[in-house]
Image (cartoon, rainbow, N blue to C red; front, top):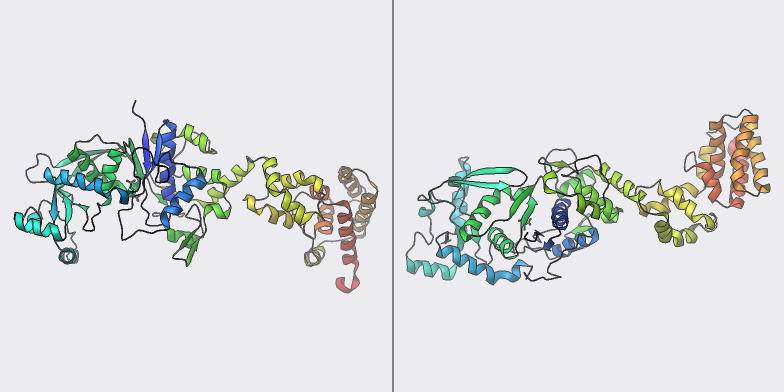
Length: 511
Ligand code: GLU
């Protein structure tokens, strides 16, 4: 069997958004699932829209996600160069072939003239189209004589593809998409698209087809927005007499509302990330990426993989290798997939659960020691991690979360202690607990002790726990109370309870 070779072929006209990343990911997954190759080709033929920061953003995103190409501009294989701007001479050869075989022709019409015609048509609610019906009314190599032709070619020209000719035996074209099935195209309605521009560059269509052929691409998997280009690409393959790859056009990623295609503006509108990593647009609009928000890359990939695909059962959590094993083109969903940010965060929480305590300890122990050594019993760092890891959406919030459960400040205390109905029994129970804290050897016995106290003095468990929590943390809620007692140094707990009871009884403040 021929080796599967799939490619991701972005145009460096802007940053890589989540839709582009999904295309890259699907191509990677399909190629790896079939033990094939994944190629990155930079399609930089559009000089006007070229953005010099874009290629770096694209490769940084792929690197972060661990989607490493087997061949790319940075890692050339035997089909290079992998940047289209470096392949100009190749395209010229193929343009000549099409012109010589009569499948393409030079066109010399001025942009202004065509614009005028386009506008006139638009005014009438019609679309301007340059094709078999009217190409003879324009200035092109089919209408001017040989000398004029030469003259024009020396100056300024584009090359157009002849989509249909009156004499063609067939005006219907059957094309096939792996996701949508067979589609029939009326060639009489096709435009004679420009395949070579007056700046000496091929257009996307020609370069893309030539390169896919020369790079032996077996499957073209790309966004739905390229489906309208498929008839032309199909015809180009046929004109060259080349074997076609399989084509699959991925459904759109929809806005969080489910209506319409997700755009970068939705990032600001809904306050959601649309790029895998940060992007600074024109150095004034800043888009925070999934990476910088704190997403685990495995969670991000998992989230993206499931917008438009599922494994056919209830399973949802996959790492990259598992996705490689599971992925198949025939489980790609035909309709658009909604971008659900809450779901993205859910994936992150699920992937966070898979990270070992050991890894988190290794990452955070230094900082925990630095910031909390006066308060936390450092021999219990593992317990600290165990408590906070379940309380955060993102791993980067771990230190902040430790602060939120550990910190004790007077303003919180004053606010919360006033809300507690401290009767004498309750205060007495806490005083006894304080005494017990000073005497016991094993801190784990404190829970039983306090529960007995509450029972004997008819204190409701809820009231007793709330009061003790406020005394120890100044707050009304937080991590499991006896876990907190376990990790905070004993002398600190004693100090805090003393201080809280003093605050409670401070007549100046209390009255
Ligand atoms: N250069 C095109 C893009 O920017 C590639 C489309 C394709 O994959 O054929 O999306």
